[in-house]
Length: 299
Image (tube, rainbow, N blue to C red; front, side, top):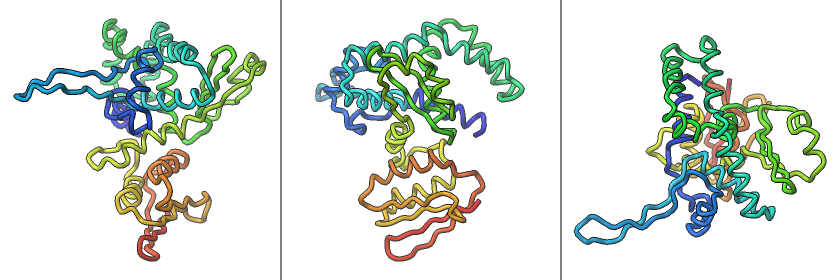
């Protein structure tokens, strides 16, 4: 991706608060309870506000989440299904969201980017980072809130096909660690984790579930997918064929079959995340019968 596209991806992850908890199959009562108990940090709960129009009706300010918060909500749901208590989830949320803020994790990320200026970023961007790093109010109330190992994991999961991208959680002592980019499991988690039962939650399916919400939005420019991926998305999501087979030339990757009975957007998102279609690839579309497509991707 270009530097500008990476910045736009950051906007999608951190700032675009347009995901409803209902789209993640979470009720208003659940999300408000989690926010009240510190399980979902930095999210505003549902509020009733007085109307200002002629009818003087009461209006509701609905909860909207950005991508990082939405994936965290999905992760919370997973952990609750393993009977993790709200108190443990509150502590875990603090360790994942608040502790990196206190440790100034974002500052260290900026410092590393500035040191590697010639490899990654333009001089203009480096200058902006240096200015931001010197602005204590901006760092404390914005960047340290949104940049942490968890949000870095989400960016890696979207941009990088290497697996695993997972969170390993130990219920007995509420410890966790993140695995990404093919890191060795035993080396990463350390010997202390081997003394207790662990839960490993893959991140890619959770990110795919959240991104699938975007796939049905015709007005939104999805900067994290290529033109080829966008064309495939348009066929599957908007034409809604009954049967689609997506294959790579020479069958070097197992084809994916999507039928009208599948959760097509979620399946498609996971396919894109796991296989990463190269820019410049060509798309061959074969219409076999009514509502029956074969799409072949050629490098």
